[in-house]
Image 1 (cartoon, rainbow, N blue to C red):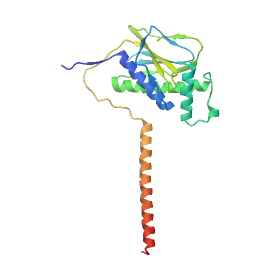
Image 2: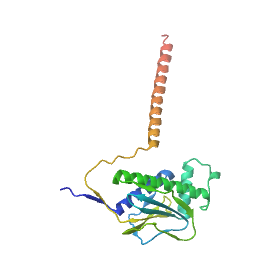
Image 3: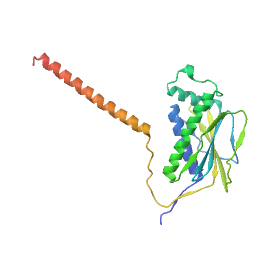
Image 4: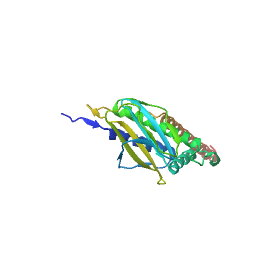
Length: 229
């Protein structure tokens, strides 16, 4: 008899961490990494300088919080805005700016969207989330899920930017296990941006081939003209 594979809360946390590093690394153009050591905590809190929280529900219920130091927030914000081609005079230089909170909130929305997609693909269940709430704060704020959890678990993971600035992710959810009864193929979601990029690349390659052929034909014509043919 084949032994069933069990997906635990910590496996779900690892999936969330992969979404964080994947989205932020892509958005900033720099490497974002997370610690292999995870802290068990007893409560989840938003902490200075910028905090964000997202609630999710469905196949399982939980809460995700990200806490950025001002240095980490500004590094990610600046890298993202510059990668988008924004001129320096239109980029905010204070973590208290609304633009910084809006950009980080949008990135958090992309992170949770990527996470829910992975959950659907890998665990064959569905979760929904609310709009991320991002804000600059100067004191610790405790946040909990407004539902009764039979066996609540909370974890904190440390993330590091390319310039060694630190931010944290906290996850609170009921202790849960997904048991894989039989093998199945994981169908990865199709990214529309990848389709557009591949199509543009294909068109560019076809155009280059046509241009090269035209140049070769022109050279042949010039050579024949020189021979008087």
